[in-house]
View 1: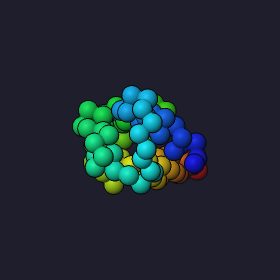
View 2: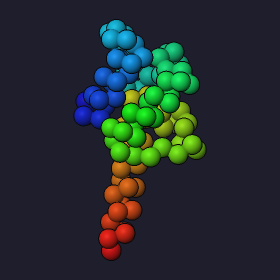
View 3: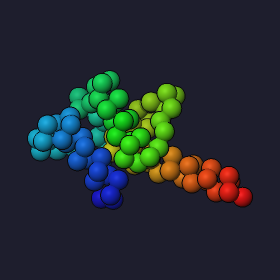
Length: 92
């Protein structure tokens, strides 16, 4: 598991499962398993913006981006790549 997934899994376990060792895979839906509700999504977004230094726009608050560890890892990687490309373009 990569560092991003490890960080996300630890956050979910600590904040939403309250430290319980409830098994879930990287592809399991947080909403489908009842792990995260709408308030939890806001907590998750706050983590993403602080920990990974990305901005999450309102239109990006969709399950395809936020509903599993795997979706989050892809979303974070894409946002960080976009941010790096923007910085590189600005420097050119």
